[in-house]
Image (tube, rainbow, N blue to C red):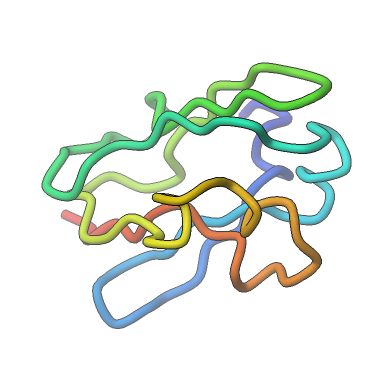
Length: 100
């Protein structure tokens, strides 16, 4: 597994598995300026690219830790990426995946 694993956390939520950015990931990447996220209904496969982030220090592709369908995308990210750069780790989530 790549070192990217330490960059995200997963948590069980009502519609599947929530995937978010860890503080370690924030520190490593720097301020996130852009994230290319999947859309609700997209299929994702474990180990394949889930999303891409552009940050101060790096452009990174983040692999999906689970397989399934995108059930939700963090609505806070529609207006910018502050949620990913803040100190509230629970707010720094990307997507929920309904596992196969």
